[in-house]
Length: 55
Image (cartoon, rainbow, N blue to C red; front, side, top):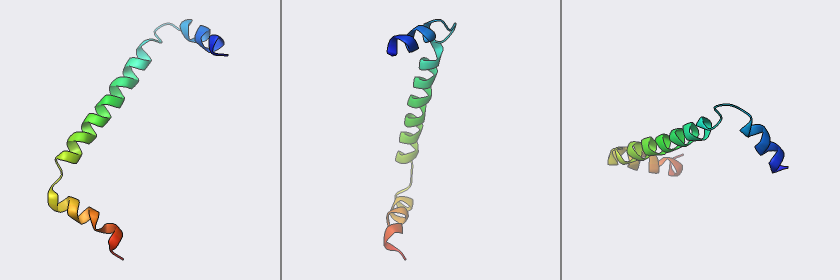
């Protein structure tokens, strides 16, 4: 079954750019998330960590 899918994918012109674009989006998202988490203030993190304990 994979050979049928692979054959159709190779017949599309310019298809090789889509995996590159998806990889760039994936990496950019997690790098942005990394910077966002590490730039949070300690006070805000402590407030968020107390949410499950508050009624």
